[in-house]
Length: 107
Image (cartoon, rainbow, N blue to C red; front, side):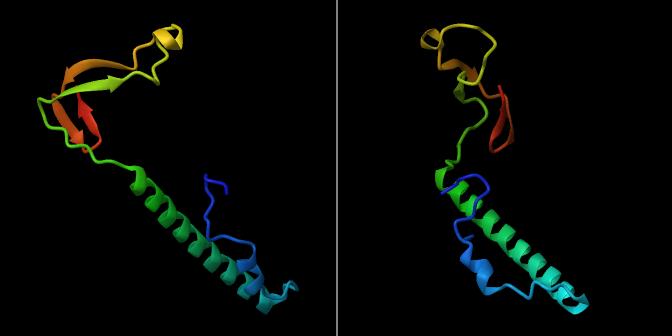
């Protein structure tokens, strides 16, 4: 199963049930476009719902307050070229000065 951009409720069999005539006359062309638009809208909504459930399952809310001491992860920083085994995983502690949003703070 693919993880990125794939909805688990998106099998090929769903298309087979809702196929319209392939011969696009003027009347059928409108029906084909309306069905395609409806399917695309439904699949997008299902995909958003699936991604939200997946994100919510692994998300942990933080309960930081102004004045708390926190450590900052340095795994993504590539400023200093050192071997990985000598790199510190965290730096700090730093004091939280202000809260911008639940996931963003000023140190």
